[in-house]
Image (cartoon, rainbow, N blue to C red; front, top):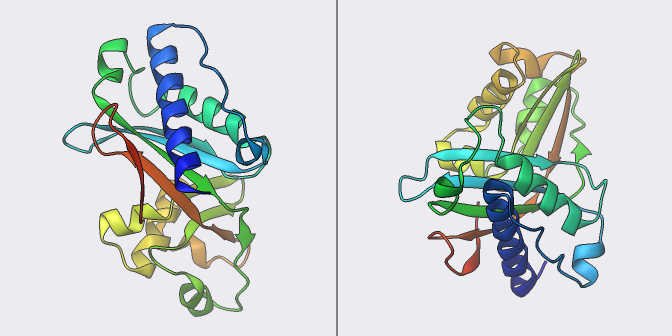
Length: 196
């Protein structure tokens, strides 16, 4: 995704957040080829200036046009079940981040060591599915947390509601994906691309 489209995606997500939190009209949907492509996307809201997470919701699979994925993720992030609903007052003091995803692909390895060797910190987001439980981390999370690959996989298991080593289970399905990240550095500020 080019930088101009990424910045537009963040502005659109910001408008969706403000509309959802304040009960305003739906913003105009951005046009263009990139927004009509089916892509997965996540919207993350962070408290400014602390950077504390305030909401993060999205769609890992390319099941809808990008414009729809961004709009639905932005609205849902205002109601992240881990936090109280985002108020209109709070909406003006969070930064908005959009991560546009590649389609997840299953990590194929014959052993836990092979899985570990396949994971690239700073490049791969991961999703774990096992016995009806699912956990997902965007590519930027292990970098922000300072995790190595084993810690990343153990925390992914926790995120799924499973014990730390659950990712080693032969029935565990681990998928990876990459993401392009665009974000505001300050609330309502210009959006820019950032590395994980």
